[in-house]
Amino acid sequence: MRVIRSSKPLAGESGLVLLAVLIFLLLATLGASAMVELQRTHTQRAKEAELLFVGDQYRRAIKSYYSSVPAGKSQSPPRSLEDLLEDKRFPMPVRHLRRLYPDPMTGEADWVIVQGAGGILGVHSRSTQSAFKRRDFPIQYRDFQDKETYAEWVFVASVN
Image (tube, rainbow, N blue to C red; front, side, top):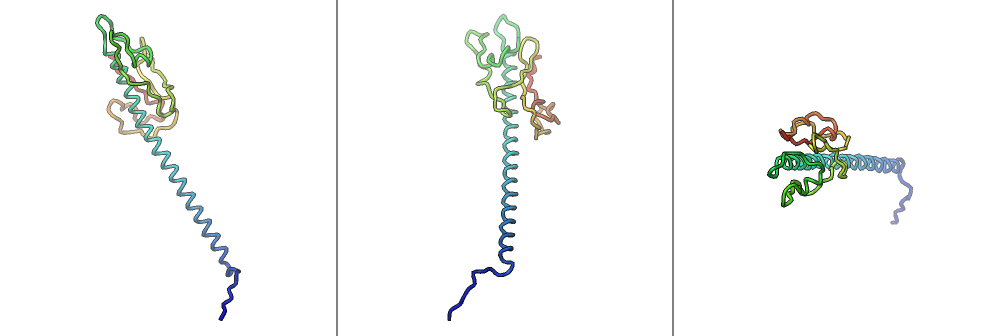
């Protein structure tokens, strides 16, 4: 006995398959966009942590430069960031900073310099991007609480 099958779908079957494909595409798109947003958030939080580390390195280096005084000279802040790499006030140059770090938020070495009497007192980012972190900063950065942008995170050495 021979069974004859029709190549024509049953009534309504083709519409159901199309609807299932559209629902699958919608869910896949929503899932992909959620993953992209999650990755963006993770990347920005990692950059925030790096900004705190790098800014602290500059703050410590400026303080070290100011505190290290060769015999017969008075305390003074560095005149340029390059002075932190090689302090030529001593017979043997002193390194207060390993290298000039780029701003993690911009990816460039385009720090805004905080000038004081006689030299550099600190740095901050040029980024006007909104900060995720608004609370729970280390004690030396409690002034960063509730700051809106990364440009407001100013890393200043206390040179008093």
